Length: 209
Length: 209
Image 1 (cartoon, each protein chain N blue to C red):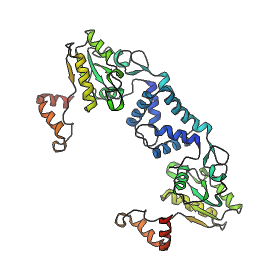
Image 2 (cartoon, rainbow over the protein chains, first blue to last red):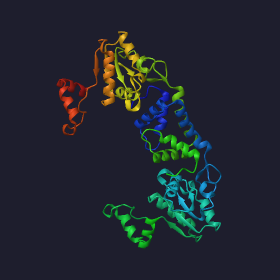
Image 3 (cartoon, chains in turn purple, cyan):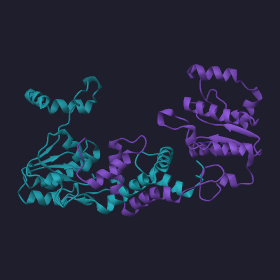
């Protein structure tokens, strides 16, 4: 594609095209939308992005994003601080919070081990997790990472780190999705769902909740 | 979806979700990407958007975006200033420029007539087009708007405005796309392509260019 007739516009398109999943055509549509919107709105947009880095804080305890030193979850007296759910990033915190099924606290790793992207264990917030367990206040660690090779690798790394500390380490259940038909489920998932079968009563309980 | 644990993050997500075609989940992924990127990169991103409104200029002649008073197309001595191609917005300028098939200049309307979106003829850059034609320097007006109801309406409105001025008004050809199979082409398009059939030699010429 030829260069655009304005460097200012070109710069905006290039920046928008850096966003994940956004190609040059979509970026151009977005830049045009922003150009057509009111000046105040475009400025609010730009400033919101700049403020992201300058004003955001991370919870001292769990690494979740926060407006204060402690996030609203770690601050809440209603949450069980001894059950820690290990997640990749804050999107997972939000996803699990939306289920309404978890009453413990989180530990945000800030990524998962991915040699392809150059992310090793030292880039992740794992030492703080080990410290928490060493302090003796933790009754269970729930590993809630993606069921990918990277997620499995990270799970195993954390498991090995915590193994000697005799804290129970669990992982979120892998099985067929609710609403899925058996014939369309892949073999590995279906196999796991048979190996890890649960008492039928649990299924009913979950449905009623 | 529940509110996010940080207002700063929430604001950024809300702003990104305003972009055309971006839902809340994608906006969250984008915000997280920007949060994970380097501070300078996020600032460059935000500033590029803010600069869009503050620093961009529009070509005095055609309404195309530009870094100077005249855009590079209107400024070029190689372009035929008497043939004006009327387009909706700058994306269409870029699309037509990319074909390398047009050597005239453009007239950017800044939109098309759309009662649904509250855009009337008075919101568009039409008077300047009429003025150009009235000045007598125009040998052809090419209407190159989308083949939608809104595009047709706008075409017809401009055609009526220019009708008394005896300038030849043409519209870009409508027919089956190059590479399309006949059986998959809709009836209206196929019908038009028969009514507006062109000398076979033209087809060969176009292929060779």
